[in-house]
View (cartoon, rainbow, N blue to C red):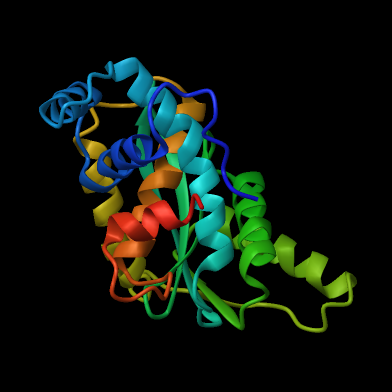
Length: 228
């Protein structure tokens, strides 16, 4: 099914351009309002915000379904994102080649959140051979809990756990793109809008890394194709 753009006062192409520009280049909504006005589109920053929050998660779900196969050796780590003036936690996983696997924003950094993230990532990408994590006890406990589930649900194998401060350098480097984009957005006012916006940022990052296997077309056209 295509993503429904009916009921909006602007063409689909305009909405997608605004959403892509925001999640790819990290500007404030006020700046994006000016950019759109320079292109002959008069739209206020509140409407731009609604577009990003509504359409980013839908497009991100399409990207997850269409991305190229990933390796079975993973790297997992979390980084900090400020929402309503408080730190929240963006759980992220990439494979050994740096390809994005999954991401999840959480208000807590504990075993339950880690377990929820690992279950989500495995549900999206399948069971990996191993996952490298840092020295976090919560991440270790969350992954061990997932292994118990895998063991007793007949999957046939469990995930090898590697705890190392240095093996995760690849994902720590990958965090930098996400943080660079969010830094220019002047903070998030609500958790749900932060999660939605981050889904769009991660999608733009996946396109940048060539994960959608589309060659010969621009990044924006790849982004727009996900809404088709």
